[in-house]
Image 1 (cartoon, rainbow, N blue to C red):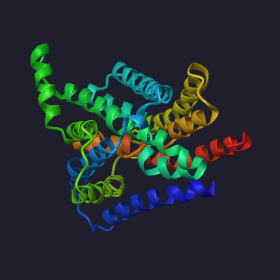
Image 2 (image 1 turned 90 degrees about the horizontal axis):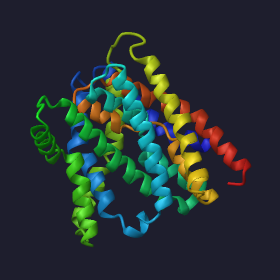
Image 3 (image 1 turned 180 degrees about the vertical axis):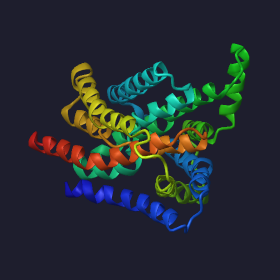
Image 4 (image 1 turned 90 degrees about the vertical axis):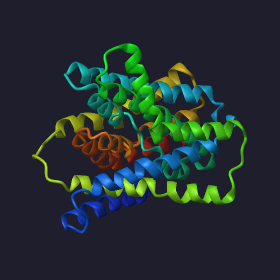
Length: 314
């Protein structure tokens, strides 16, 4: 419990810092949007590029683990997406909802927590999960959002407009460029590498401060709260349970690999969905509440999960 709390406290501190600055009017009403634009156009692309550029085939050559994480992410994402569309949500909004219910915070919480529990053995699986979440799942959500925002009905024209929008999107271009660098075995100059590390290091804290700024805005009481509770339950209970079943029953992975996969799936929602909601000017209140509720609730759920693992010899 204490180790989990030590990792989550900085998350809440950054959210509260943004919340307090907005409530005291130290930062203006457009601060959340502008700070989020900095994250989307500079900090997060640097993080995605850096992650992909330093990835190796050896790291990714774990087909069972890759399949487990990919399937669990896809099932939750597609399931929530389908339900929200049936409920009458616009495709762009349903896509934001779907990623909010399926996007684990592997980067900011996953790495330190997995290191505490599993040591260095967790680095490669957590890297794989981060790539799948921050690059593949993120890209899927962007494609669907862009598709939903296009008004063109002719299939070939619609496809061209979506591709053109994606080609201009830094969150799509940056991981592809990083993969090219990794594939060609290019070594980045030290100055470029330092630049990327400094810029990418700002992604998580700025996103959390931006989230706090957004939460400080006045909205109708209970607006979207029930939906956020449902998404939180899906994220913290359904997704890790599904991941455990796939890892242990379908692929029969080693026990320690199963535990790492379940721990990563049980992480609260990261800030990526909020960035997308703000960037595309979609409804962000459900997403922001899901991030907050899931992070708070994960203090209990993660502690219980770690206790179970400890009793089984982890």
